[in-house]
Image (cartoon, rainbow, N blue to C red; front, top):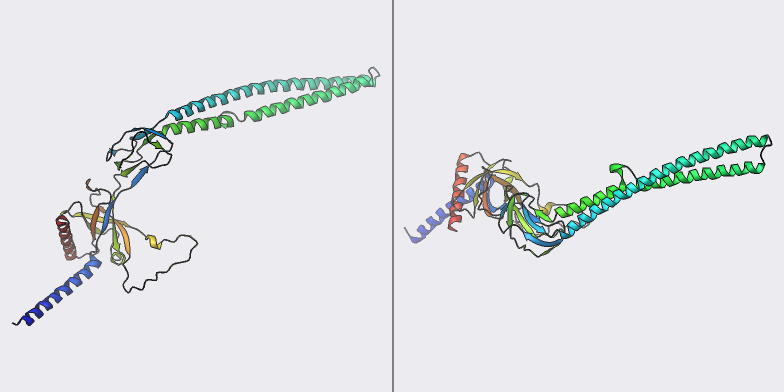
Length: 355
């Protein structure tokens, strides 16, 4: 056999192998799609104090695991303790002011009773004098003076009633409805709340990460001082080409390979998928649409994010947030394709081990 014939035979064999590989790639891309664009995600909380002040104590170290409610750091409470004392004094002053107003209100009630008695007495005297005047026993001047006294008594009664009304308005409602006490109590509650916020505690179970906080720093309210990586709510996010997900069931089984754990294949299941991507989000920004003006014949495939969880729903502790992974979904009932897919993932895991 000549060299040309030998070369042509190998070229035909290579062409057949290429077509077989291409057919497998096209079929596998639809039935058992795989993506290396996957990673471990955990919620990361930025911890910021609600009040300002000097950090006097840091109770955690970098990469320390904490439970919800554990103390992270403490801000100097001196100013806030004084604020609580001031608010307590203001509440006592408000109570004393109300007690004084209640005493004045009682005096006003007594003054009204006295004014009513005086008014009644003056009216009786006027009535008596008018009767005597009709019998010519008293002068008109005495009757007029009695009428003037009645008007004065009525005015004095009205003044006493208005004074009581002013005192009652200043006093306000009784008990919990009293405005002065409500304001003072609110100020005290706020002062106590601010004092409690000088101790910053972990809102969730997690691990303190990239800790740079030290005592002596002047903390500002709502300024982030450390990060807390939440544990127990991990997920694996994977970005697949849009077309490969059309035949994948909502709870399709999957396999996951982590770059940090080469040689190991983890069974998983599809848990959810996002409904859209950022480019498809409409925002009322007042601008006109910007159609895609690319003239490329073959554009980049759109990727959709899905989420998978391991069968035991527990990630290995050694995986950090952002750990890279490779995910394969099985959108077929073919046992052969699933076997081939698992074999492919084992090969990928070994390649990760070599790499």
